Image (tube, rainbow, N blue to C red):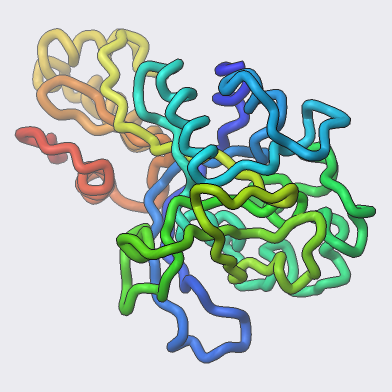
Length: 309
């Protein structure tokens, strides 16, 4: 089950967008948000997955284990995540921040629903009051959004990490809303929602501890850790990687250095103290020296000298 969950995590590239603005609204009502690269579940958490981790299935609709789990509170979702992380021996999984959720819903668009601004297309992507027949449906049965994510709209509302409150003033990097207020946030709409509740900007507040509903579930997110790679197989140039690891970059001749730098450019690796660091979503347009600096800052690795060309 752990492997299946991990296999269905989708890498999301970082970016900046205007959060909290319905298309056509005054842009001053929104705020710019920078989102770092992260992972998100391709599907909503299923009853099969929830029961495998927690040992019980609280859902109302139980005709198939591939239905999304529902009747889970925010606290229930946190307990699932705690147990799941204990199984992988590190804190990897979490709920998405609200800013991350809206970002994946928009999928780099400026539309009401991410895939289109046309409500008449919603039934191709979402189970909601017009087509659900009053119940949830197996995850992944309709079209995915442009980033390959299913049921972002409809089926079940999805918990996010944040407390409900006003959006922060000004630009922010993956903000997590208010420090603490009474309610947590739900996003995306459910099988019994009107189309307006499924829009990318729509948000709903709900009590985090005791509130459970048959239209409320969740989707996993995960933070991408910086990875330190010591292996000899540095993808295209294993021998060069091994030599650089053992003797340092300057032990390579000019041609070898250029070949290794070419590989570094392609995979957003950079060299420091004969080790290789990378993120999961490499930049594609920056020169090597700029890219290395950018990646270094984004994953907040602090170490000594970074090699320059």
